[in-house]
Image (cartoon, rainbow over all chains, first blue to last red):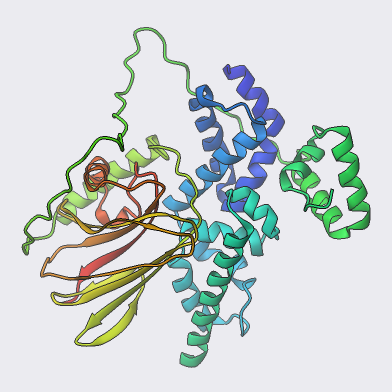
Length: 160
Length: 256
C-alpha cells in the first residue's frame, strides 16, 4: 500500500472512522484518535489481512481510542455520560463526588462501553460487533457496571 | 434477513458500497423499523462531510542510509523463562527526590508524545472486574484505586474477567523490584480468581497489576516490560506498556 493509497482510504473512510473515534472518546479527542488510527494503519500496512479496509481500520481505531483513553481520563468529567446512567435518584451535587469515584475506578474499556451505550445509544449487537465479543458477555458487563453505579449512588443517598 | 442489521452494513450503505441486494433488504427493513431508520439517518449525517477531515500527515518511508530505530526482540512464549525470585524486601527510602521526579516526568511526557501507543496492538479481552479488600485487625474495608496499607495488612483481591484467559498478579515497587503475587492461572469467562498477600514494611510506593492475557505472562517477561517502561513515575503507569494483556492496577502507599 502506498501513501497515496492510504490517503485515498482516508478520504473515503475517514469520516466513518472518526465517527467511531468520537463515539468512544468524545468530541475533543476524536481527531487525535483518527490521526493515530491512520498512522498505525500506515505502519501496519504490510500486515493487512485482506478483509474490507473499513473493518480493518475500525479495529485499529478501537485500539487507538482505548489507548488514548488510557493516557487520559476524560470520562471523569464527562457529565453527559453519568447523568444518563440508570440511577435510583436524580443526580445532585453531592452525588457528583461519588460518581467521580465510580468514574475514576473505571477502565478505559468500561468507560468506552458506557459512553457508546448510554450516550451514543449503540445496541448490544453493535457493541458486540465493535468489541469483537459476545452479546452475552457484554450484557453481563453492562449489568455489573450498572449495579456498581447504583450501589455508589445509594451510598451517596445514605450519606447525603 | 432476520438478524439485527450491523453498524458496519449501515456504514457501507451510507457510503454507497453495499451490494444491491443487501442494500435493498436493509431499506425494506428500515421502512418497517423507525428506530433503524433513525439510526441510519444519524449515521448518514455523521458521514455527510460537513465537518472537514484534518490533514493526514504520514511519516516518510525510510530511505537507504537512514538509521532505523532498534526494534526490541519480541517475547517468545516457547522459551522457558525462569521465574523471578522475590527479592528480599527492606524499608528502602523513596525512589527519587521531587526534583528528579519532575525531570523524569518531563522526559516521560516527551516519550509518550513521540511514541504513542508503543508496543503491540492490545487485543480487547472484555472487561476485568476487580475487588480489593484491606483487612486490618480483623476488619475488612473495600478499597479503590488507592490503597493505604501498613505492614501486616492483608490485601485480598477478587478478579472476574468477562472473557477467559490467564490471570496473573504482579507487585511493582517504585525501586523497580517486581514480585509475583500470583502465577498465571487459567480462568473461564465469568470465572473468579481470588488471592491475598500480606503487606510488609516497604516505605515506598508500589502498584499491584492484575493481568488478563490469552497466554500466560511469564514473570521475567513482565519484569522486562516494567524495566523497559521505566522512566515515568510508577504512579503514572496505570498499565505496563508492551504487555499484550488487559491490565488493572491499584496503588499502595504507606499508611503511617
